[in-house]
Image (tube, rainbow, N blue to C red; front, side, top):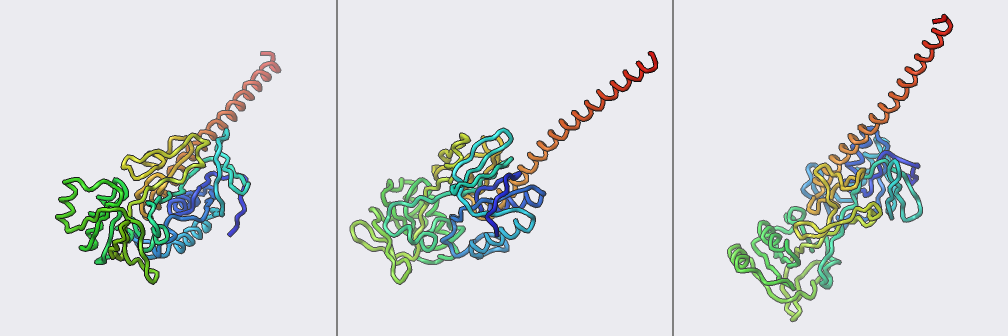
Length: 339
């Protein structure tokens, strides 16, 4: 592995998770010069394994990343460690500035920096995040199946979340916490599914022998639980794009903030594509990787179109010069023959 950067690349990929590495893999296989700049702070770092990913079920996240890096390098791509501080527009592309003072030029950018999960202010919650404090039933539901699961209400997706987790266990408790009580319709749904509702603010999560033991309410009541699900507020990591006029915006679902893009990953700023959780807040690893691959292919197609335009312009210049030379030769020939 090397952290040396060339002066410029066809594509700089900012973010080295599943989306970024798969995008880089597609570009390297397309014989593009590409570098992945990765700060090394993946969202799924606390998790024991990646789930729901065909042929890689249960693989530790760090191992998946290392395999991806090796595959990118195997096709001539570069992977370097670094944190991007800012991006600026140039006449023929972009300048990417790293926090350590290094810079690199790019014709195109693929941004795959993911998101940050903002958790409610409950003591002990962050320390258990990704272990027995969870968010996604498809990522973690099987591992806590048939256990005593709590769901901490935190926003507009909490009702959806608690009904989903009911698929994995019939022992579900919904903590309304500081949110409004369930509506009449929601209360009926919860009752029909056998989901207990507990009112009152949650003060902390209790841990015994490095395992979640339960949820402590503000009044001191302890309700035993094996796992606790919480819908986080998800915020895309994209502050460094502000210099291009590209900013995060509120997601229509109310789940957080994202960078909007079209179905190919093309952002509102020409030359900038996004993929993975930075634009798709709900994407699991497989979907993020697929988004990166699709964006990589679209970027290559865009570069092919630009390369072709440049080649045509050069061809026309040569053709025009050759035509002018022939005309001059014909005129000189006519003069020599007295015509």
